[in-house]
Image 1 (tube, rainbow, N blue to C red):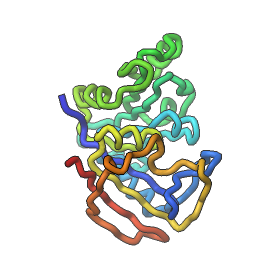
Image 2: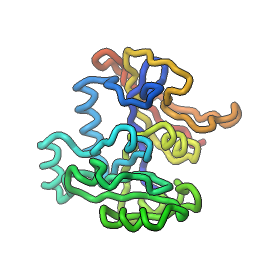
Image 3: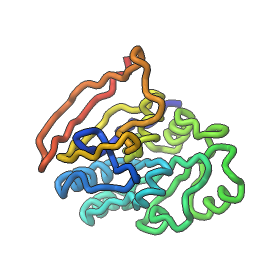
Image 4: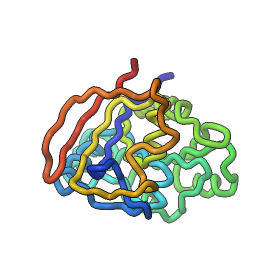
Length: 226
C-alpha cells in the first residue's frame, strides 16, 4: 500500500489565477522557470495532469532538454517520465499530443462508469487504469500507481485536480511561481478550485524557500499533514 511522493508545480498570476476566464494558457513565467520545470520533470517517475488541462492546453508533458533526456537514458530510464491523465469519463482525444510526442509510457486513469467504447480505444494508446465508480478515486489511483513502481510524481494541474489531491491529503510539496500579472475574473481558474475548505479544515503550509526569479517569485511549500 502507500502512495508516491507527490508535488505540484504551478505558475500563477499575482492574484492567484492560472489562466484566463476563457481557460486559455498564458505565459506567466519565463525561460529560467521553464528550465527549472524541465529539471523537475526529468527528476520524476511520472507527470500527472487532469483532463481539463489536456483539453485546454494539449501539453505533451515531455522533457525538453536533450541533455536531460540523455541522462535519463544513461540511467536506464525512458527519455520521458510516465505521463498520466486523470480522466473520469475517458474524454481525452486519441490525437492528443501526449500520445503523439515523445517516447515513454502513457497511463489514463478512468472511472468504472467511463464509456466502454472510449476506454477500449484508449487501450490502443496506452495503459488504462480504472479507479472509482463515477469519478476517479484519487487515493485508490495513487495506491495503484505506487504499486506499479511510481515513487515520485509531479503534478502540473489544473485547478480541479490540484483541489482533488490537496483535499484528499495526497500532496507533499508545492512549487508556485507567482508572476507579475493580474488576470482577474471570478470564473478564471485559480491554483485550487473545487468546493474549498471550511475554516476548521484549512490546509496549512510550511514555507521551505522563497526566491526572486525573473519578474516574479518562486515559492516552495511543504504541506502539513498534522
